[in-house]
Amino acid sequence: MYEDQTFDAIMERMLERVPNSVDKREGSIMWNALAPAAAELTQMYIELGINLNLGFADTATGEYLSRRTAEFGVNREPATKAIRQGQFYSRNNEPMDIPIGSRFSVESVNFVAIEKISTGIYRMECEQAGTIGNSVFGNMLPIQNINGLARAELGEVLIPGQNEESDEDLRRRYYEIVNEPSFGGNVADYKQKINSIDGVGDSKVFPVWDGGGTVKCTIIAADWNAPSSALVDEVQTIIDPTVNQGKGLGWAPIDHKVTIAGVTDQTIDIETSLHLEPDVTIGQVQSEIENAISDYFLSLRKDWANQEEIIIRIAMIDARILSVSGVVDIEDTKLNGSTSNITLDAEVIPKIGTVTLEEG
Image 1 (tube, rainbow, N blue to C red):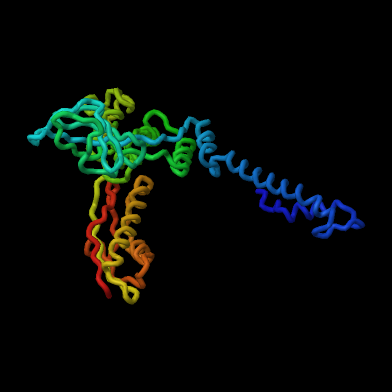
Image 2 (image 1 turned 180 degrees about the vertical axis):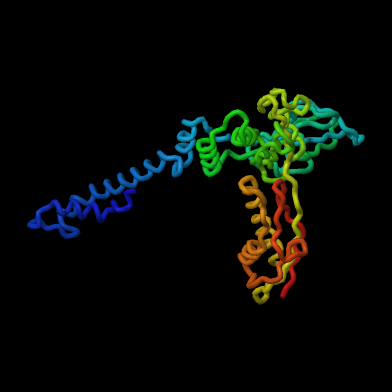
């Protein structure tokens, strides 16, 4: 808003107020006297522009965006801790119990046993908040000695950890709540309640999907992979317990029978022919191309809830591959053996399969 209030513009206005009988050239006494004030005014206009942007939801960032959205009851989601499954074995390779509160480490990430699931199997909470607790697997080392323990393994993700909500996601959620008011079990109400549950990344709501009074909500995990059954069961219990469906004992209104489901994967195999720069081989670009396609699929999964159905476009895959250093051209790209785009069902997300590259 104040982009035109530059140092030169301010100096010009100030010097116009000085009589022409006075020397106003750069370096003169008058010019040097006015320059520091003009510099301070320039800085003031910069600060005014910043503060103006921080006062509106569409341009605010960080703490100021949090304060703006909080005025409408939309609070930034804090980082959460991953819940994992831990398995523990004795010297005889038999499942064994451990004390609740026992701490373990794997790849510099610490976990603590918080609940027993069954003999030798526990819910493990990551001590560090965020997605860091989702990505480590394998053998754990006990931080305190546990008599008889021979092996500890960190298994599947039960509830994914989430990083603190980003400005982009908070702003999007703010607009959804302000522009689409939730009430009494409408679609917006279901989406807002389900998306607020730890571990849920996004959701689709299908009203009257199996007759009057029925609602289906399909969810995707916060790490954008297909959610585990544990997450689906947890959301079902919160929204509308299966054993008491329609009784209003969860968040769902009375007479709403809600079914929670998880998105499913469809594996997409890619094959294509490449023209490479001299001295560049397929092996040198293979992993980068796979990463580029994985990033494209990730962007589709993140936008899944906003689309009626995901379309995997060959042109987009070609563009991603062409961005890899060493690739000159590409032709004859196929998805699952076909040269056509692939349209997925409403509750399906893409998963990268084999990537077969040939040099043309």
